[in-house]
Length: 298
Length: 271
Image (tube, rainbow over all chains, first blue to last red; front, side, top):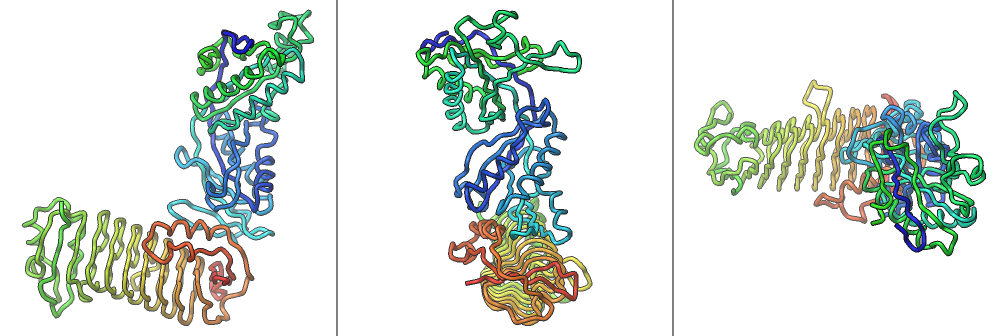
């Protein structure tokens, strides 16, 4: 399959079941809601070493938030419910409770309930106040700038993590421009996050390493500087490869995000130095979710 | 199906215990069986059809017409369904109500919604003393649900209240929110003496400044984020509380009762 001169590999991305949650952070203005959201989703690019994958889903209009203030919706993904709950609580406590003017609300009504501000209330040292409004429990925690308002729980649901595609380009700047275009479009899709810095990862990995202590190491088949030293997957004109990883609430959400992302890259086309789109997988043996690139773009 | 309607034929001299006529108890009964039920009337027991003309069949939607202030225990422990009272109601309206909805077009007597657990009670007129309170000797009053009173309420509204909302469009009598453990009482009109007496926790939300009390300490003026959410939850009500102009988030906060636990609060609108 070739779109606008860009070859779409007959391969697939392999993804895994994860647990996910969503929270809504509001503040006096969008600037401070975003600062808090960036802090809460920081150091959360990969479950390999961060404990979770997190990202900003989108900016919310005041009309969409529970308290009518500007807000940001964030999502956190982890391999299990326990780990997710721990990450959510730690991050809420250190990054949102601490952030001026912030308030924190559930972003998923259904699912298994996990603690959002339920245990943060103890920071109130007995001065905290509970309010049950329309069946939802809120905690008002006195803090130095006034009151931190948080919903007690949010929902945890089954999700999918690790959808991905690779952008193969003639140069590093061209690969980056293409990925930026893809991310811009993908951020318009609800229920997905791209957890890596700016949504893009340049250090894609393979399973295993020559060093026994490492479970993963650089994906040498896609490293352009190793074209002459390893069993490469790159043709001579490819000088740079970048990857976009997607976590979503469902397979369909990731499908949609991949489609708009790949389309945005293809719109730039071969004339912009984009040669191929590929994807990362483990032979289909590890992850139950397979995203076949050509089916998605059909 | 039309509403199961009980129309009072005459006003008995003695009080009537209406507790058998709740939706869940009538759900599986035939019309004739309902007519043959007996109600305590003073020292006597009287058949339902002796006191009321009956019509309709939907036991989940009960209407009591020509009601007056000696019909006690209407909607006692109601569990689902709706009861509409046309006229006044006596004491213990919605006592221990578990869910469902009760609407009264007139005034209600003592202990309305006392120890209510859930559901919605709307009173278009005035309510007597001990609205949403605990029965004498008990330690827990209303535990959930919402009470809306469009008129005034008597003394001790929300006494020992544990959870839920009491919304009063008119005035509240003395000892409003006394011995409250938690929950919210909102009063648009004036409040009487001894507001929040021995209150432990909970919120008294006032549109007008209360009488000064040494038992509450001024915590200053604040913009509170939970208030817009609270007011948004009132939007579905047919009430002044649902109007956009009723909403505010700027209040002066008083903490008390300092002679008790002191974790309660009186929030007074700053206009």
